[in-house]
Image (tube, rainbow, N blue to C red; front, side, top):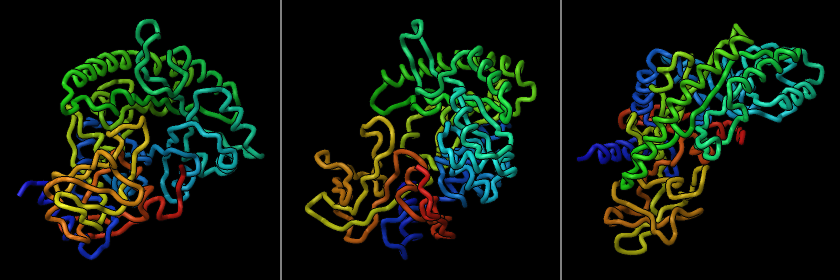
Length: 400
């Protein structure tokens, strides 16, 4: 029996009392992935990206481990909710225009002490000031650095279009703008190198592309390491008591951690290891989050139909954004239909061994987005479900 076949047998036994659709997290794999992130971080703390987890119980579990400290959130509403739920250090990784929540933040000492918000434009400061509604608390801010690699005088750009702050001078000017404005304090710098951390460099069947990606990433790492160090020195000249410099992502943990300027690493997807993280040479993890759909039809030889399954991930549309049939091994989508909103036909010889009601296990393309489809996650240890915990959705929250 292969390792994947053994996993399928465990998951089927663990969930035999549960009707599909059902979502699970294999805690042995989750914990092993957490340990691997800590090892690769080389002693620097890891701030957990909540968008990649979207489950309070699992955020608590990973933050109880040595090597993890703090949360990187994705909306201001989520940030305030997490602090009110007991989390003490929340970095909002994206700028917000949520005026009502900024009024709450500026009027509550506990929230203001625990939440740091992201900025890259003086207009964001003005919006927060206008939203204060009498609140006088100092708002902690983090400056986001654009990490993109610019070549040929800026005519070629590689990387996400995020912050407009690219040069050390631009980030330092932003720090000075904050210093001149009462009611705000710069406490950190964040730089997420998605073109390094979030792009696989070993794509099956595409050796030329894989080599090109590795070359691009090596060039980008060198350029960013030098520029990030210059940015931190420039900002510290304005803000000597800077608290943190956050960088990285699951795919680049060890490289970013090696930079002296970086004090903490941001990562989250590496806990669940969705399918987009199968194509990396820098690490390999264990798939920890899966969902199962039930077989509801057997249209013919070599074909079964499961309920639902059309859960595409965000990003540029493509086959890599689709969930992948994972267990039993050997199933594939019908190219004329793909994963459907209500039903999904699957092709392959393993279909002939599946009965009505059997489970087919899938891996989502991305990590936390799976939790927007399920109210609960069943936590599996060995061949048993040992706990069932709500996702954000199960607690009544869909922040985006």
